[in-house]
Image (cartoon, rainbow, N blue to C red; front, side, top):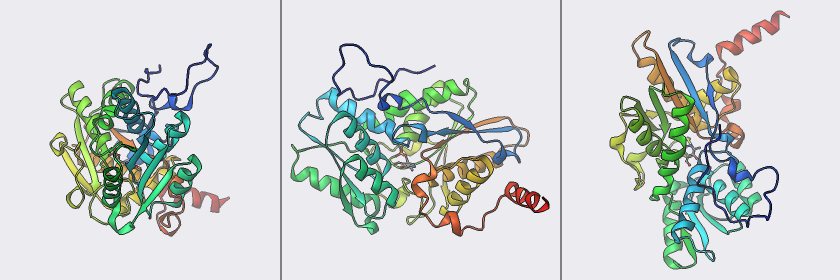
Length: 339
Ligand SMILES: Cc1ncc(COP(=O)(O)O)c(C=O)c1O
């Protein structure tokens, strides 16, 4: 069953007769919930489910927030037809805005740290967005400062979408992601984990899940150190804290090392056949930590948000430098030796 998608920008005039097929932006949301069975073999009473957000047309969870920000901006009149959409992004929101801008014919300018992966830069270029690079050392906060400065200098020229402060960000997950998870787990979800960036995914999803069942434990995850390799995630203690972030919503907040995030991305690829991104690896590391702390024989349904796939990180060295070989892979290897 398809949920109605109410947050899709409708900028292309309707045809006299509806055409065949569907628009790509109408495919935002309703992502699959994938079972990860091998990774939970040590915890037979735990079902680990990954919300596969790379099935969104722009390839990440950020399609949801970006499309809701655009349609809410249009609906409220804050995003006027002659304006350029401007925001700070570490990549995925930018890709989502750029895709929506190309599809609905509005210009997009993005402020972004210069060290984001080459794959992200190429995707943005392909969609035709304008990019303002900010120093790598200033991280995502440097990009935020640049966007504020640009919009302050020429306020009428830009609609500053400000995903860090925009309620349409978390609302996309309150109305969409949470309802989907509830339906896909038949209301049996016991634990929810997600990595924090703007915090929109965690805030909106956890807020709604707790309304649906107050006993669902919601665990937020963040990099364990200010300098880390988990693209898209924020170390809150050392960063500019997003206005939409309310730490009191989380039952617990866990720090994840970059090495653990890498190792779990590799495990997912080699044990489950899932090519996931680094923050998705971090989410699985957090989910398994939660599973390992549960009382033995306690039934649990743990849902982790997997924000994007691994294809945007294939130039990262950890895929090839890592010594990580899984048990499953080793057994396959020895099996092939015997042939
Ligand atoms: C790869 C990746 N993971 C996690 C996140 C965090 O999502 P949110 O901004 O909703 O907290 C982002 C945000 O851009 C991201 O790009």
